[in-house]
Length: 188
Image (cartoon, rainbow, N blue to C red; front, top):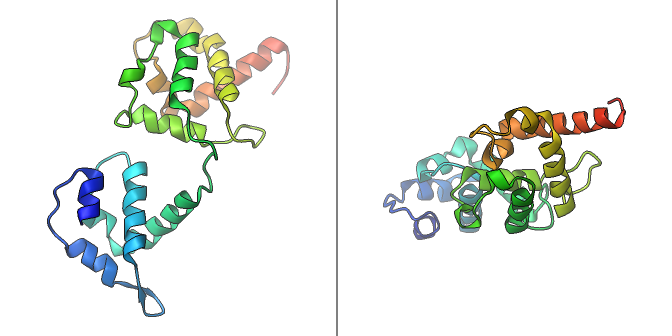
């Protein structure tokens, strides 16, 4: 519980959820270990957008799935081997969109788009390669030339935060690529 409180900045006092996780038999008379519980806590702290309670995290009907995801996350599978270079990507954005510039001082882990940028970074390109800084620069270049910015560029909602939102990223990027191909005379 001390680890949970220290990591999340919480003041939880009930040991019951943690005791339940540590005393539940997972297989062959073996219970979950303290290290597995700590890994799941760390994984949830990094990946879950909202704050979470021990009762939700230690729900035994879901804990095995959480542990599986946490083990994959800890091994780095499904993640770009290079850490997301937030500062460099924000600088690229600010170069392409000076009127929609993002303050580096305001860009932090508490901002939902911070995690959205990491999700985009950890995705692969259409060629199946891990994203690199040059890919992000090209994406911003294509988006800046798309009709989205040509017709709605002055809209206050059209920001990096909006574009990086998982609901929007795919369609915005796909539209920008398709329009680029049309300008080049290439059919999709």
